[in-house]
Image (cartoon, rainbow, N blue to C red; front, side, top):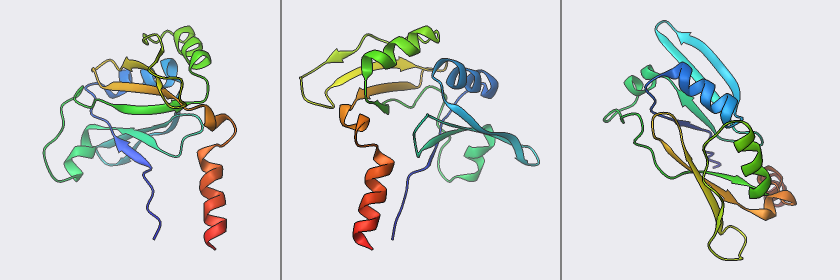
Length: 148
C-alpha cells in the first residue's frame, strides 16, 4: 500500500492575507481558491516542485476531529532547496523576512534558514544539495519501477 502526504491544513487568521503571503513572498502556486461547498472556501497552495501542499480555510477544522489549532501554532514546517544561497536571495527579493542561512556542519542537509508567516507559523528551509541531481519525485518513480 502506498500512502502519500499531500496536503497539510495550516491554521491562519486571514485566508486572503495568508494566500497572498505564500503566493507572493514565498512563491507557492495557488492550486485552488474557491468555495468547494456552500460556506466552505479552500485555498490550496503548493511549493514549486513539491508533492505536498498547504490548505487554508476556516471550515477545514470543522471537518476534522479534535481541537482546532490556533493560527500561528504550527512550528517546524520544513521546505527543502538544492541551493540555499540562491533561495535566500530569491526570497529576500520577493520581500520575505528570512534569516540568514546557518551551516551547522559541512554535511548535506545541515544548512538552514527560517521565516514566519503573518500569523507566526514557523518554517525552516533546509539546503539538501542532492535534490539538484536527485529530485525526490524521480527517486520515488525509480523506486516504484524497481518494486514492479
